[in-house]
Structures are given as structure tokens and as C-alpha cells.
Length: 237
View 1 (cartoon, one colour):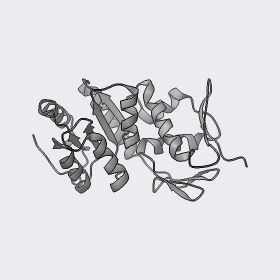
View 2 (tube, rainbow, N blue to C red; view 1 turned 90 degrees about the vertical axis):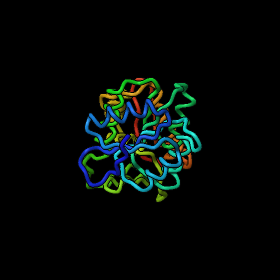
View 3 (spheres, rainbow, N blue to C red; view 1 turned 90 degrees about the horizontal axis):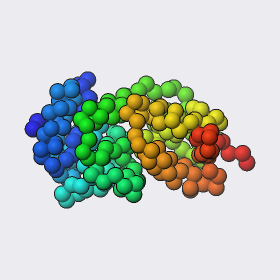
View 4 (cartoon, helix red, strand yellow; view 1 turned 30 degrees about the vertical axis):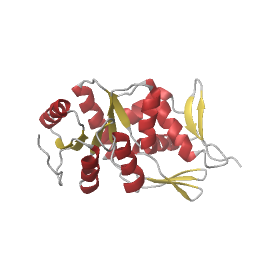
């Protein structure tokens, strides 16, 4: 199985960290035939090293890995290293609690095994397109929240907020629409495109987003209303 360090090439580069050899070979072959450049690691420590030393467009992490788990790798990349590359988790468990753990660690999306390879490809392409999309010039401000779209950084009341890439995109979509509502279905379409997740995914990301944007502050800004959708409100006093 090839392990090619991604350089300055136009093809999407992927790091796959998966200990099941037969599955990893199948995924690598499929993605390479689809035009991706693939690096591969069979355990967490090697995956963490590759993610720290190379630049990828997207990372695929199996949750259950020998030694360092996929959740540990994801959390270290996000919190210790500050990697903002989109991360897709692979898991054999579809319970909400397990999915929440992945999102808490910093994952952007997940697929439950067994999965269809075309769906994996669609999700990866959607994630890489969102990551490489054109940045706006002007910062967005809603109340005391400020989004620097060029730097992809967020502050509230002057305090820097650490968001996952998907959390950032959700907040950006809400800020653009503020103070109007975005219907749940429209927000999912904007964030995930045609590769729509299941019903737990947006709810999980919103929960994590509220922990960062609202919980440490006196006034909540993210509001959900049945029949209307979700919106971001500036402080009223």
C-alpha cells in the first residue's frame, strides 16, 4: 500500500489511519483510483506523526486503533497541535454517545461501518471543497462576537474561541444570516452539501458550539426555535 507524502499537488491529499488491513487496502485503492493522494498508517502514533509532519486536505481516523485511539489522535491534533484539517471518523458504533465523543474530540464528520465507498468519497470531496473555499475579505461582527474570515478565527468579548472546522462553518453561516433564522435543513445543506449526515450530527455540533460560544459568557447567542430554525443573536444589553 503506497504512502506518498503530499507535496504541492492539486489532487486532494488524504491521511487514512485504519488498523484493519483489508479495509485500509480497499479504501486506499478506491480513493487512489478516484484521484486522491493517500498516506496510510495502521496505528495511532504513526498517524499522529504523519499529521504533524505533512499537510493533508482531510484526515480519516478509525476510532478503535491499537495504542493511541482515534479519539486521542483527534483530540491531540485539535487541542495540542492546533491542526484545522477536516477530520472524518470511522466507527463501528452508531450510538449517539459514541458520536458525541468524536465531536467533542474535534471530529467534523463520521461514517459508521460498514459504509459504501462512494459515500466516503462524497463526504471527503465535500469536506475538501469547504476547506478550500474562497475567504471573504471583511470580518463579521454580531454583538461582541467577531469572525475574522481570512484568518478563520473567532473572538467573543476579546476572548479567542477554539472551534472545530465544522463548528466554525456553522457559526459563520449563522452570522451571515443573523438575526434571521436558518432552517435546520438549509443549515445542513449549506454545511454538508449533498452528503447529508444523520439527524444526530447537526445537533451534536450545535451542542459543542454552545459550549464554546455561549456557556462561558453571561448571555447566550445561539437560539433554536421550533418551526423557525436556528439563529445567532447579538447581545441586547
